[in-house]
Length: 344
Image (cartoon, rainbow, N blue to C red; front, side):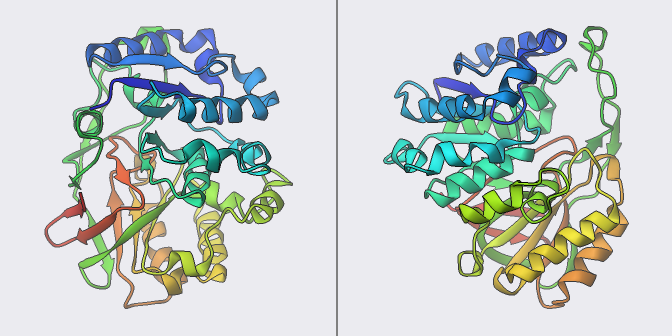
């Protein structure tokens, strides 16, 4: 049972800006209705410019959240970009490894937080992928989206996720987040469940991965010139041996990467030997179903392993609603039965 939630801004400092105060107020109200104590780590609400300029403060907040015995769950404010700049402050003197030693705290986030998930994987902590404070708890509609809420409530009540099944609907992305949108529901569309693109419908392994756009930046310097070098220096992308028997999770961002970028990302991963090592691939539903058919074709064309199971259209990542996937826990994917089950 979770009692205290610590909110951190590890990428973007947007929750410190006045123009989202109505969203933050709504999210805080909902968390408190669950009976949760909520603590914003010291720099979480310092705003976009401050957070951008001070990666050391972001790193300090993460370390403090792990060290504070009262905090049971670390919830990321949102994704963004730029969290790779925390690397020196977390690894040069084993700071992160020392902070997480002996802890079983829950860490939840997605998008650029993929980088933080891989940092925590590197020091041996299992994490949870799929939701964040501003994107999910602060949803401007009348309530947290029911499918999203189901998994968040399971996590705070039990500390784990036992299984995920598909959502019956997906939602069009909101284009206006102003105060006038409070209480306005999103437009929903019928969804069609997990899609098996190839391979056996049943496979197993421990899931790891995240946002394909962020993982692309591990290898490509277009966004940040120093990111590939830093990620390489700190060995952040797991090596082929570490991927052995795992299931790779990939989901695409709100930037709706072009099919060409999606292909190049898959080719980068292929060069590392990931697709020769994993037991399967899970791909998230693209936001607004952008390029869904193209992504499906690219997954089979680039990976070029007809025996490797690939399941598409999971409700994880940037398309709403969102489930939560435990990383580092044995999972059994059953595309025929439309369920993914996790060991206790």
